[in-house]
Image 1 (tube, helix red, strand yellow):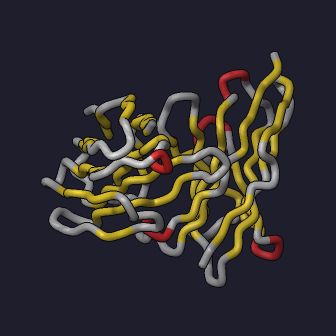
Image 2 (cartoon, each protein chain N blue to C red):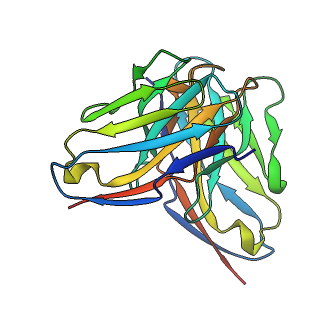
Length: 111
Length: 115
């Protein structure tokens, strides 16, 4: 039982490049979330998926797209990366008992 | 819409000393409140949560927090800090038990522990 896993751990992109951040959970949770963490700002919700087949925008969705591939996997895509997207990205899932589990994060730098 | 403030950006305490981290929230209805801890290079881990009932809640690692509606506060406390408690602490407020899409996180308080 690995919990919530994220790949890659680190990534450096050039402005305009695209990439997909992967998230998977093996806890059979329905809801999954993508956050970004910036210094002094806590976590901000980018997108979430309440259940397989559904996705919704969070607080800061611009510049991102998501896919809920199946119950286990929820990916975040940057189509054309910008320096403002330099951040640490966290994926999380929610238990039936409403506890939120976070992955270890992906540290992304956009040059 | 709800909001969260954590007045202390950084706190330093000696090992064995008591700790209180402040959290103030703004929300018009009954808030759902959380404290998370983030160790360097790690994701967030839930320390404790308040949904209803007893306003003093116990969490993991010896932490507790008290909900004070009159002061709009949910301060985190620990009677004796250990060096391993050095981390970033986040308070969060939500709009409902299942509404994690509505959870707002505070900016965090960084805790350093002096041996």
